[in-house]
Amino acid sequence: MPTPGARNTRRIRVVIAKPGLDGHDRGAKIIARALRDAGMEVIYTGLHQTPEQIVETAIQEDADAVGISILSGAHMTLVPRILAGLKENGVEDVLVVVGGTIPGDDAKELKALGVAEIFTPGAPTTE
Image (cartoon, rainbow, N blue to C red; front, side, top):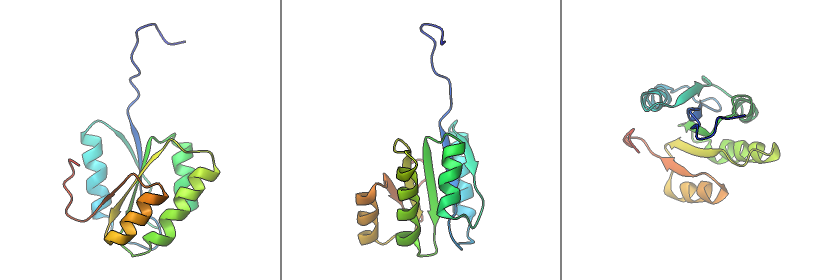
């Protein structure tokens, strides 16, 4: 039982994931480092993860957020599968953000599906 008046000192846990065949990981690693520098605990999945693997990692790691880095153009296929997988597993309190080359119309659709924010190339790491 927690001590009365004690603060929860658990750091925010963020899974950074690279789904599909996208082999460009520099942006994901830069974001992972920026989040670590900001005091968050970061779990980097590595390249070529399936949506199912990303969902499983988020569950196993008790993630507070999932950052999906995708530059392959497959965002409208892969991101909805990740969102659906989280929902199917009862994980509805995890913030999902996407970074990559996402056209404006696709960004609107992804947000309507539940993505909290879209970050495009060149976005500052302070956002």
